[in-house]
Image (cartoon, rainbow, N blue to C red; front, side):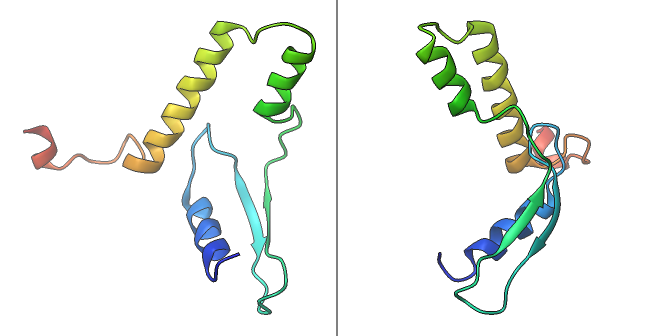
Length: 97
């Protein structure tokens, strides 16, 4: 792990508050460089997107298209939030022209 990488990622996650981004609760950044940092987030008990896709694949089925579009839209909204910030922030005059 690169020096400062974990601290930077935790700092970013602390400031994010969006329905499509896992909720951050706490962290521990050790002082010793060989110790492992950890963080506490909301528990997502339905598994990962990868495990869901594997379940459908093993069952010989395709993931329903409507679900794929829902996931795509959720990811796009989360990325937009990370890029632009909250939607209710005041717009600058230059952005409107």
